[in-house]
Length: 467
Ligand code: GLU
Ligand code: MG
Image (cartoon, rainbow, N blue to C red; front, side):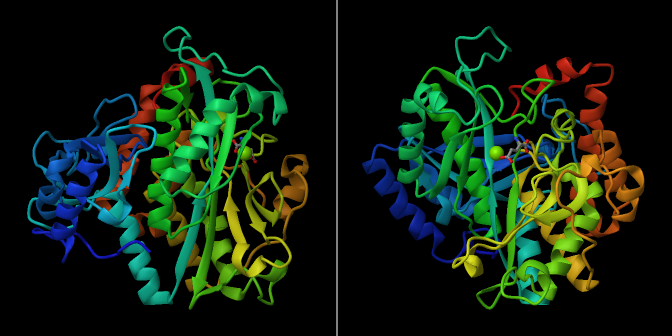
């Protein structure tokens, strides 16, 4: 379990001693530096690095970094809000020592996610990891709930020898094909080894649908740990790829046409160690709370899209009949509805049952993503929300009348539309707090403006190597 306590100046109790011991141990293992990692509002992973000998100092007092990155765009331009985006001010990055891992794909380096604290030692209101910890603390306190989450990762593997900016798939074999597995055999074996060395339990790794596309799924953890893991696994995928002459992209749409890279979220709510998505008296074994939680997520999906699909490139991916789940609908094990109820395998349902949210990609900041999904679900529980009729098959094939009767609607088809829905959503804005809510709005507007006048191919190219 992730510690939900905030970092404090001088260090959390025991952290400085622990960091001192760790830095000695790491130096002995040939680790020279530590990557301090966080994700900005646009979904781009940003870092500072410190020498291994500086770990105790960082655990006590943090490492300086400007708050300006909260309003960076994926193209590194900066927008401003009432309080963010100014060249003034400073923050302290505090590493979470529980999450520190030696990077198997980057010899000489370790990695740790950070929380960001103000110079006065307070929570930084723009820190997405701190936001998720707060949502979880409140969920435990107000509802007696804990959660498990897993974020699937799809990515496109290209040749590093390709001309700058271009994507040339590193495989030629068919979708899900044995040929592709052979073609990238060494790469994927090294990736599995690196994940194992880093304590990441992999469920499966396989060739996916689009040219050069692969997918990895990893074991579920508490949401902060799951978000950390998503960042770590992507860093690992990228690092191992470089050692094999490969270049990877997690962009929602590497090309303007065809199937994109998703980042489907699996989420389950637990009370007193019991999974609420199994063993209940509602449809498919859901308890009343699991149904309301699921209904809460479904009801807010149009606004949530500004968080789950935050890039202009996200809307090249979010198309019907590509398994990206672009309709406000739910169903059992259905791959075209935005929300898929996963019952799990007979005999393991109490452990495995969860809900899967599909209109999510890897441009999403995973901390904002999970925090907002949970906030939406909790609102559903508070309202005792009920799920509408379930869907089977492909909602794209419903005629207008059937769709209206089942309350099935297309999710936003542009970032501008998504952010307009987000701006109206008091539940999400309140959960985020004014600083983060404004950061999301400003950054999404900035991304939209950045692609004004570009055609789909130009949008895909603009973001291809940013995530
Ligand atoms: N690539 C699809 C997406 O963009 C997902 C395929 C799958 O279901 O694994 O969401
Ligand atoms: Mg997939």
